[in-house]
Image (cartoon, rainbow, N blue to C red; front, side, top):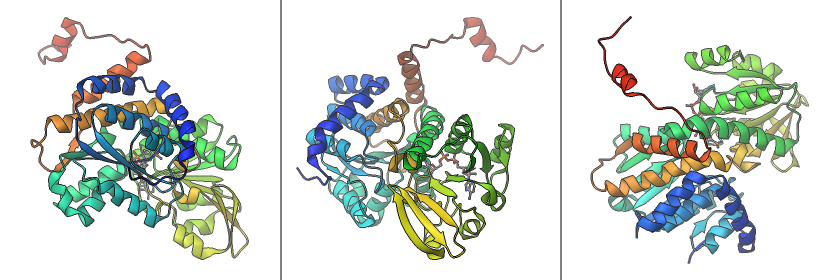
Length: 417
Ligand SMILES: NC(=O)c1ccc[n+]([C@@H]2O[C@H](COP(=O)([O-])OP(=O)(O)OC[C@H]3O[C@@H](n4cnc5c(N)ncnc54)[C@H](O)[C@@H]3O)[C@@H](O)[C@H]2O)c1
């Protein structure tokens, strides 16, 4: 079996941590049990490009039990948990992922996953899909379909589809309600604060925290930072999101103004150069910057490197840049998603829903083999609702249901005041 990981002797630790994450993944457990009985993915070759974490370990084992022939590679050079990777190899799953791998190795690993000649792709950020389309077009004819985990990946896929370049159907798992309402908001919210805390050990109380991008992730980060006692400032380019932030009780202002007063800057825009050279020029001595968006393009790191007179690593994931005027700016986790670089990514309880959607969408693609034209598809509503229903049940929460009278009323138009 071919694989490329850091250290196979970490497998025991990885196995225990995968089991630990599994405790908080009851929906995934139910899917796995059914998959083990029904084998809906029997003999299907799957290449998965995902953050190699303990939660991904639970998804991978469910797909394996479902009969899939699965290989995995990392979806970010800095997000791999080396012990989880080692455990996956021990479980017999070829895995190509090393924390801290350089860009060349990252793409070599993606190519190793593609050498598996996938019939299904599971992507997080669309690097696997775009590499297959750019470099291995001959593989595309055999691909039944794919799934995409994150906002940035869905945006890239929609752009490919618009340009007529996407050659197979892909389900936008990110857009399921049971994914982005929870994973992006509560998952990124908590784990971003966790990543920055682990990297720096700062006290949040009393700090001015500037959150750039008030989308699903930004809302979660702002709320959690406020809960820690920070004064939160939101920066946006979209009037509705800005308005929502203002009415949620945050200060809203242009980044050029926020740059002068912020202590900690967090980007989560999915956009390039959300913090740029002109903003570095305004920042206070000691300002800290971190990114939680998918790619490391949100903070203009090349510009920061050029402006800096010297650079030191103060502690793991904390780089100090000293500028000509002696101000020191700190960049965390090389501008890569800080929750996965410096902490463990989203807690298992939210990945439970995201990955149950992933597994059920892969099953859906196989069931509908040959019926879906190339394009980006939403998660079928039945799957989204089923994941929500099962999660509520696992949390021991029951809800009401409509009476016959109410159902009839809601379907009618005749009755008014
Ligand atoms: N760290 C993680 O684990 C994790 C988890 C989920 C999603 N993501 C990634 O986080 C990013 C954001 O995802 P989301 O679901 O919140 O997206 P979203 O579309 O809901 O929100 C993005 C927000 O950023 C704003 N924005 C865009 N450009 C901006 C700019 N230059 N300045 C200020 N605001 C700007 C948009 O108006 C929007 O409100 C994506 O890259 C996504 O893939 C990361």
